[in-house]
Length: 361
Image (cartoon, rainbow, N blue to C red):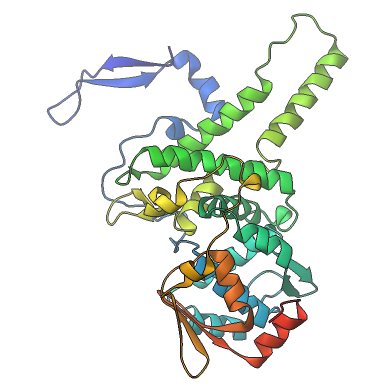
């Protein structure tokens, strides 16, 4: 009874003989819930005429995270009070992270701050080793989920660095639910921005319904009704992570595009799902990211043929290795270049910083 089929009397050979319309008696109520263009969009397989909500970025891989932690350890005061990079820091980033946009690095840094992986000490950011280790030991998909959830909080200045841990966990679990749906589409699955927005909207509404869909007694006093409505509102906020102002569909879509979960399809207003979601090494993902951790790894096997060291103490990582191992190996190094391969250098200052932070030889 929400939509119905209607004959198109003005139809031609290029237009359908029938089309679907919305029940006019329900249109006003539906528009209060969400824009009708979000619920019922037109075909979007034509040429793309609208720019993406954010600039597409690379996937937040282990070597990008390890490189960024190494850079912040070397230059902890690279940001101004508003979160933007200082001029000298921006020049170094363009040299060491060539090909990676500065706005991507800025968004990544704010996201990691929201995850409490850095301790703010005045204008400096110091890595929190314990939390960084816990984050590194998560499965890759869980890390991506946390990054997307924290990015949404970073979109709202009021929540930057002030997001509750339980809120991040619930939002990350919500993102994992979306990943699970996208994986069902297969490796060749392409989606439009409106598809992602509808998917997020419907999942959020489902969570609200699960919280507030209880049967209410026909007779209740006014005071009791006010208490019930307030309790339902608080429960809905908790179910959505407690950050509804920032954790919305538009911000989450931007996170997927910004951090490489969705890859633009050339010439069309469509996005391909990153193949990393279908990788065998990323399939075992728990729906509760706070309780997941990777199994113990054989460091000798994982690093075999992946690291090259020359006589000048320059270390090149030829391929991706697990993030915990990456962080351990680069504890006494400084980043020289981050790209298809990452290049670090063992320096005296980096070794002193590592020893001061508790790293033992």
